[in-house]
Length: 178
Image (cartoon, rainbow, N blue to C red; front, side, top):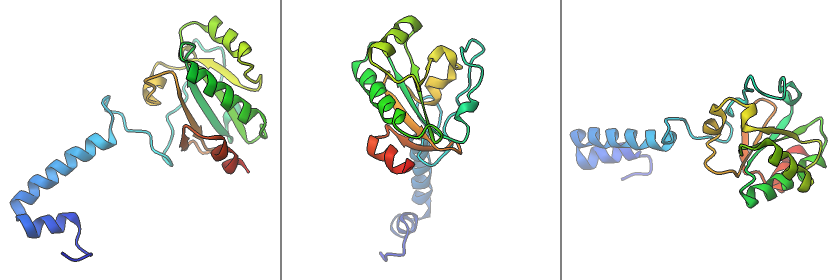
């Protein structure tokens, strides 16, 4: 085998053409399951377009134009998940200390009780610069598109709508915005 041989070339020389077709078929099936999740949706990929933030007709917010041309840090959290609450506060603190013309923080509560969520945001001292919304403010597709299985998941999206980080750290956010 030479270093120039691809895996397919190697299989052709070692196993023959007929078995190679079976290999390619199996490879393609495995690749499909690697690219798509159980719901048939593509996995989120860094550098690819992030899912749309589409507001529902019941949203308290009229539009998201304030996010245009900015980096957006999105955090999905749930009142019943202490780790997600801690992460929500952490991301709020990080982004509130940065230039608001460059970055916005969107906190999305996946819980059903908006009153509870608002009280938690006050108790947790989440910055008033935070755009605080609930899952009800968006179309139901949002939790599926962002592949939210728990209350704790965060993302950073660039001004062009591309995903730049899943679970961004303070160091990462600061390195992007400096």
